[in-house]
Length: 77
Image (cartoon, rainbow, N blue to C red; front, side, top):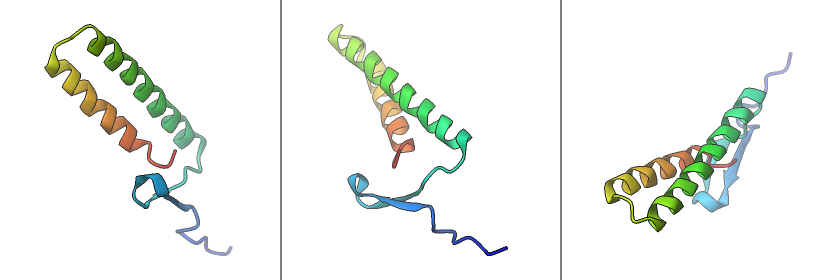
């Protein structure tokens, strides 16, 4: 059986300062990335609601950090 090139699934995300990532190849990976994307959308929604209602700054900062984490986990998706 021929060996697969380990970099065959690598792609470049030009929107992320040329960060290379491995393209998901398994259904579970795609499902996890979809879940992360959904969580990021919900976090943005809560941020919009909390900001519009002048919520506590510490809560908004925590959600901002969580949103950045979720978005960074989705690089290339």
